[in-house]
Length: 112
Image (cartoon, rainbow, N blue to C red):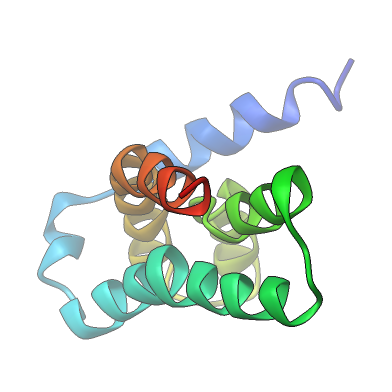
């Protein structure tokens, strides 16, 4: 029963750690991480998937897994290991919001 509650607890923790002033706090780190996660990583997955000759559903799965937003577990790990939880919480929120645009675009591009 505790394992089923882990995702909601992680989301609550991210929400508690989210501060809007983090959008200006260390802007470079925030937007660098968002860009890498939503654009560079799927681009690398596209390239590697092509190298291995993946096509169809297998290629789309690799691409979409690479294009997923930052996990809430990243926030929990950042706080527990002494990292900057504010930036991580903001990256989780921003990548989740932006992935509503980027995920369909990556998938549409993969199907062409």
